[in-house]
Length: 297
Image 1 (cartoon, one colour):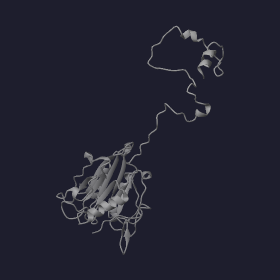
Image 2: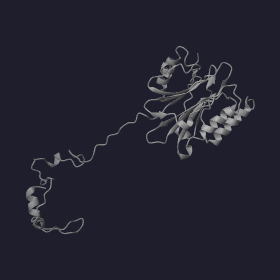
Image 3: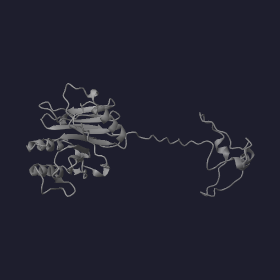
């Protein structure tokens, strides 16, 4: 309102149409001086602005803060399960780098690395990934590894360090706004029939705090094509039926779902599911089996 209207209204009695209370004389407040750092001025159109210039829906100035949305670059988290058949073979590290780039993988669960302690991780893996590996020292072949993008905070939990001959590696990832994610990589040799091999896996699964909400992904080459993962049963013509039954029982006891149902190894004569991915929360995983990953020599 204009200044002249403001002064005219202070001597006129009126009632508020909203609350029904009368106005109060401004003289009640004229006898006291309050010192304040806040300044004010009368509402006035002395600037010459017309009603057409005034926008009630989109004011020229506002005290409301501007909302700034920060897009996260750590989700969705992409994981790659891969059988390397010797990552130290000439050209294999470049092939692995190309696969990681094409799939935009953040985590790689790898088996059959065929590495030895004398080979440094930076010689074969991308420099922007943190590497966790367990090499087979007793003989050629085997070996597992996990490589995790350095944009995630990861570590190898002390309680999950595997000292046995079992080719098993664990890492823990901290994901912003979520419970910890435990990643495991396992390689089971085709001729391994000792039940203790998978018993070691079961003992380490029991150490992961899934009962407190932790997420779990376990992948690798289990070399057990005799399991029908759709029906969760053992095929009639399966070899190593005892070991197949042992793995099925372990996964059920740990409340794990196995997600791979399409062949991961295809030859001219047959196809089979050897590479598996287990999780305790399948609603968080979207599986892509259109292009199984095997780095052949």
